[in-house]
Structure formats: structure tokens, C-alpha cells
Amino acid sequence: MFIHVDCKGSRWAFCESSGRVKIVGPATGGPSHADLVRQRILEGASRAFARSGLQGTSVPDIAAECGISVGLLYRYFGSKLELYTEICGAEAVAEAEGLRLELSRIADPHLRLGRAVDYYLARLSPEGGAGLLLSALAEAPTNELVRTSLRLRRDVINSFITSFIEGRIAAGELPGDLPVARLARAIAMALDGALVEWAVAGGELDRSAVREAILELVGALLRAARDQPARPAAASA
Image (cartoon, rainbow, N blue to C red):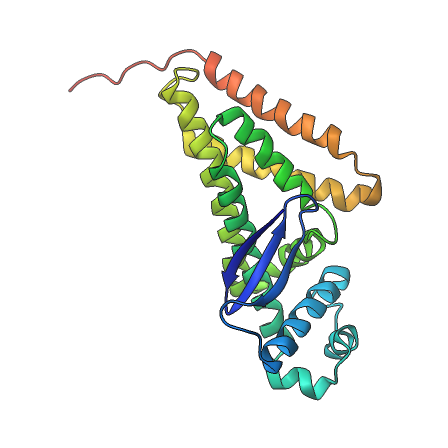
């Protein structure tokens, strides 16, 4: 099943089974010739950047991947960096919106947690955008636009984890004085360790084992938080 999201004039589709995000057409109306060429460039550039990163990909590389001339590419995008940042931003928006829509269908919080992990792990493939994400992480320290895109992704993950913890507090499963924001951020940072593991393991990544490890880690952190001694009440003035 595909989840469709409109972003920056294009319609992006997230495939739930493969984790792949791709451009499927313009956001509104029928595609013009210019729309189709632009989509072709975005799709080809996304593949090229996922393979070789920003620094390792030249404009001629992108043009060759798209099957167009360098001159035609420059008619649509003023620079390689402009093209790269648009792809990073659009994929981050599509991924975030896809996760939000996917989880909105699931009421049980524990099932939502498992589905969120599945969604995340589905992205750990070249087709799912992991190569582009690694490239964006490498570029982020010197590129504010890329950092902005990655912050959107980070905020969506933090928001989901925060909501999950707050739900467990409301259900009486966790104490009400937990440092929710810090705990959510720690879990989110641990999740991105799976991206590093994918990069190291390549095609040998055991997604089932990674999934279980993530769920065990989250469970252990929440149990530790639940079992910690109650904090003394602040003395009144």
C-alpha cells in the first residue's frame, strides 16, 4: 500500500512494504512536460546521491543517471546543492507524514510502537532512502538547509516517543515525574544506531534481530524508569 504526500509541488509516495519513498507526479493537475522532466531529475538525482553522497556525485553523474544533458538539468536546478537540499527536504516531509498517517490508524500503543519500529527499519535500504540519509548526515554540519530537513525528521521521531511515554504515564504504567523529554531523546538517538549498523552490515543486516533489540532496549529503559525510587517532594518555602 502507498501513502501519498504532497510536498514542494510534487506528489511523493511511501510504500509501506518496502519503505521506499519516490516521486509519483505533480501535486495538482495533470503533469506537463516540464513536470515530467523535473520529476525525472529528482528521481535520478536521488538515486545518484544515495549511491555516492553529495560530494561524490557530480552534475554530469546526475545528468547521466537521468538520461538528460547537463544543460537541461541546469534549466531546472541552479546547482547541485539546490537539487540535493530539495530532495532531502521533500523526503523528510514525506517520511514524517507517512509515519504520522500510518500510526494514526492504530489505537493500541504497544502495537503502534512495534509498527513505528517496522516503519523505521523498512527505510534501511538504498531504495528506502538510507543511503541518502547517511549522505545528509555527513553534509549536515556545514549545510543549514540539510540540518533543517534532518531536524524535521528528528522532531517527528521524538514526538512519537514522547506521546508513547506520556500515554504509559496516563495509563499508570510509568511514574508521573519522569523526565519525558530527555528519555524520549535518548531513545530516539539509540534508534539511529540501527542506521549505523545498516551501513556497517550492508546486505547482511538481520532486521528481525535489530527489531527485537530496539524493542528490548525501549522496554528496559522504561522499566528502569518505572522502578527508580520516587523523588522526594520539594520542600515548601
